[in-house]
Length: 234
Image (cartoon, rainbow, N blue to C red; front, side, top):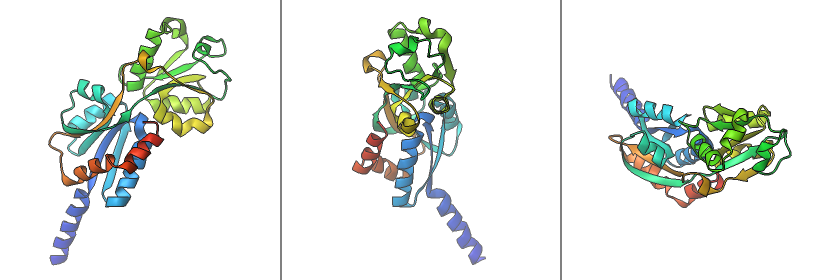
């Protein structure tokens, strides 16, 4: 009986010593690295979920486990995600990437007959899809490139098609670009004045605060975490 009781307490301890988080798919690389370093330092397990911001936001709001959500500050507020406090991770940047199938180097090259397929994330649900649409509208390129535009659900999907060469160019975030930089051609940073600012934050969902999350947020403010974020373009 005593052995069963000890095992029961141990199982509670193991479950309590973990944090469930959700994040936009475009931040998978830095979030995974941050999670691994944090877990190695604290023995607190991070259980991550990645995907389209709007979809995972709904899951986060309806889940009894997800405690921390990472994404664009304005998008989080727009989705009416209730949270108690937040930590800033950095600034998101939109980039245009050409696949290895092309040797083009400028934004104007999107008009070239060589460019037949341009990928971008969902223009209503994905942060960088919204940013890409704003850029195309502000530069009056939307109508001219309309027949070339291919909309995908998430940033990583665009990146995947860039690597495979199934699209000639694509709009993604700088963070995801770093994960494929050796497998694609040229990258062009988009003028930040041509799309709305993107501030990436982590928030603790209301009612989910605990000591483990306090430790996670303290870590995210540390010089080591900031160095990891900068390495990933944030």
